[in-house]
Length: 313
Image 1 (cartoon, rainbow, N blue to C red):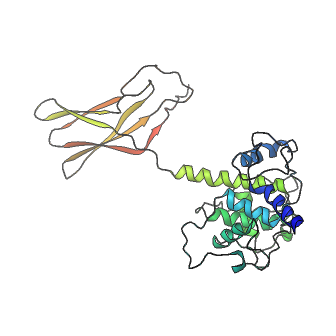
Image 2 (image 1 turned 180 degrees about the horizontal axis):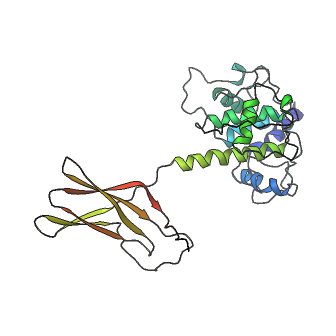
Image 3 (image 1 turned 135 degrees about the vertical axis):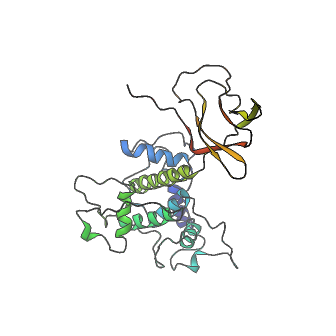
């Protein structure tokens, strides 16, 4: 019993925790594996068999890959409510409730990952099986556009039709790159290196869309009205004080509404990171003139904060 417990803990350590020597690099990684695997290690998603070896060519078990997916893509059941706490035995016949990976299997099941009820958690997993789990895990994070194109694998006939769509998306989402032989090798047992590198690509893919969908922070623009005469007012838009030069504001249009508002739309420009600008506090402003019959209000244009374009010579 003691030997079995030690063995289970050793397997869990492969992927379950951040090694104490997280700052040290593994010395058995290829050039294309080093960056993604070390990035996962820094996040506490994977660890090696010891401080210096990851063993990327070693076979990955089903339990290890499920645990990686759940942890790496932050799958959870935080918003779910249960009459009783769900256990692995509620969904699987071979996953012990007290196993180190039990909760990950439960979370995977509740998030819709297609894991067989009779899965052997200590058994190996094929490349096509992992690809299918990975795509299902990605889809729990949102809806993503897919290029309408069919990837012609040289070994297409070897791919299970049930997972063919997921394998296609692995390439279309640029999670993997095919070799010159254009084969996917679907039935080949997944290695630890492949599992980690593919997961890293999936995390980057999900995060890239999450960042792109974040609304741009709105900046307060102050509107000042100065009377020119009884019929005309001067309107000044100000971004307030900025730490350097290079910031700008420009009026793009004025829209006169029936409710008496003059809606002044504007665009903002920020200094490029590598540009040379005045090292002094500045106040970017823009001005225009409107009829005194209207109340001026400022509104950002559709795309407002951009770096200035460089004119072509």
